[in-house]
Image 1 (cartoon, rainbow, N blue to C red):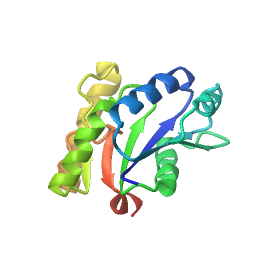
Image 2: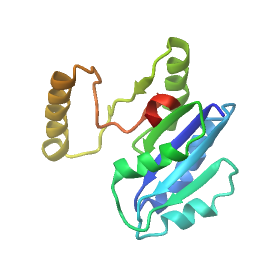
Image 3: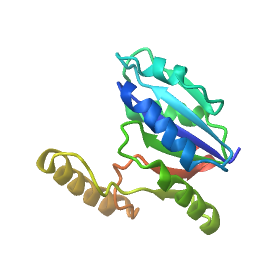
Image 4: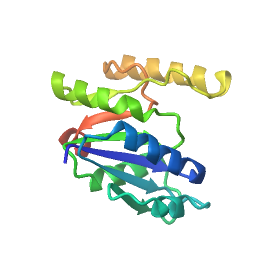
Length: 163
């Protein structure tokens, strides 16, 4: 399998079907699986995932909320693709970016291709400014040059993500 898309969801019932539709359009022609990790939702998120008729979809359910990092790690552990794409289930990541990111990773031999949140819907003072400060600190201390560490949309070579 070429690609595993791992999506952390928490109380995203209204986003599941639009996200699955967008992924279907974007990933047609790519051998893929979609792994939803329900991070302890209190709404009908899991029921919505289970209600979608799609052979590419798998669901992992947490009994309580452990957080996005743990949810993504669980999905990565279960992923079977040569490449793994991580993304949020809140519709702020555009699935149409995935094929280009995957192509870049393959053609240029990158272990990681990271997305950038260019049209964030977050509050400027509560989210955007602290995010910019955190990104600058992380770049300075790690010497890893990623523009937006907080963007969940990433494509990893599988062995890199699993390690």
